[in-house]
Length: 351
Image 1 (tube, rainbow, N blue to C red):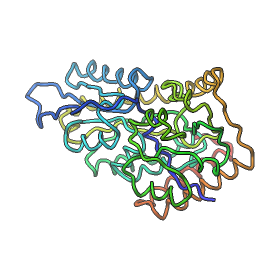
Image 2 (cartoon, rainbow, N blue to C red):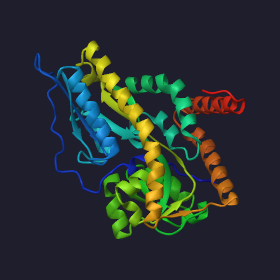
Image 3 (cartoon, rainbow, N blue to C red):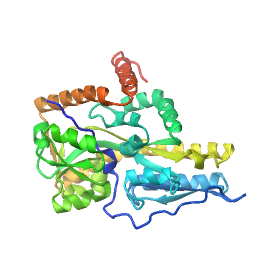
């Protein structure tokens, strides 16, 4: 049985409010001499969330460390649109930066589809072992497309939340799952394999839940609690799917306006934000599950037989993706690095 779906990661970080008309205005191609470089950054992370706070603290550091020469202007919570909208606005110069997840990163370069493979990583340590080696590869590919990766984002671990209890892949096929609007190839792929995807913009997920258009979606426990979605979908499948990987990217055009000295200061602040999320989010994810259980969340226990089915389906998906992926060498390298880490771990060595 093949689990032929990718996790629509970017649908996990959003608010229900639709974007206002127009969005951010275009900026001038060149800043006036002596004028600060203003980086307009859009993201789907909820306003006031742990991710939003980390980004704002990072922006304050940009300004403080560069004496105001580099400034960050935030557009959180989807006010600049869905991730495809954000990517489009970066390409035409309306935005200079974005904190986006796998869907947005994949729109910039298909190599990031690696992070959409269910159960490819079994732990954060595996993910970090792969990123520590492959980060230069991803940066180089983004730079070839006109973007610079400033840091990685950490969103937690993804689980399925559903209106009715789901333990098996077959039960998941009977749900009305969120599907990313605009990805016609994947939409047809799901349909042809027995799933019932419902294409929506990420910013319409909450409306979809409220109206009954969808009854299942993947997200992290911390987001399910933060946005109170678990009240509409009070069941969580008790098997994790993948780490929620994101990244902060800026256009090369905007980055070129920042002096070399100030770039170092900006990157240092970005690294601090990355490390803070890396330390805080997994702990808050665990706490969120406990808090939701106190309030009625049902964590559906997955039997060993059902778990084996999920793992087999995920493995078959990874194999099928290899033939369909525009850059299969990325998947090959990631698998080699992951397996090498597992071998080191099995031999009792640390990474």
